[in-house]
Image (cartoon, rainbow, N blue to C red; front, side, top):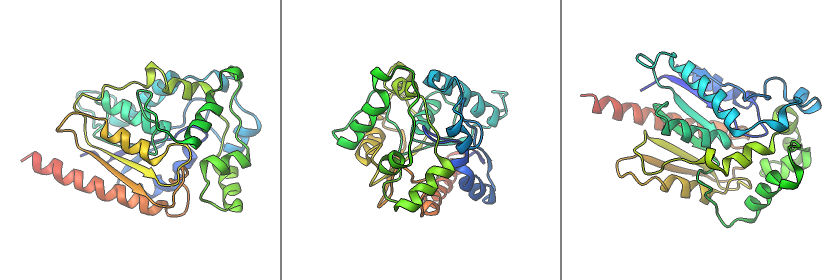
Length: 270
């Protein structure tokens, strides 16, 4: 199995959110990359203070195109000899992970607190509240601007106020409403009946943005009998699961799963 990993961030974050993960997995011998979405390149505070003029026009298809190019480049560009990378994605990055798995661009995938494909929903008030606030059609192409308060309430609700403020200052950016709108349309559709490579779905028990039951529902929606889909829930974690204290446990669980997949792949080769 591949020793290359591509980390894909979600909305309101940049590649900086993966810094600790890149260091962690690099030290384990993986070749890691963490590309930023279009209009998400740079220091988070600078991006908040001076949002790119085109941010509000950013569409999901723009993000897919840019991240797909990064995934292909990580594999070596030449499809005949390319080493398909491991893809680990958070939130919308989790949906992109599933999309790229369905396109046969990954050796395995790890969607974390993933936005679900195919307009998959769940009856959860914080979930609907956040979706409605971001996709609000009356706001047009005006970017959704995070504040320390909204970020704490929705994104990192398990942290105390001081820790949440620090997380906001270090990682948070504003984002395009059109990205989430696109997730709820045809660009967020996946054929769940197709055979896929193995995926490990990670959820956070206290997630106010993507409820843990929706992540589990997503993992069970793949109908092919031979597709290996695993699900793991982490207690006392928020949507900020990749950055909050205890992220090492999450990364370690993923590493253990990757080792298991490598062993299975090796056994199947003989």
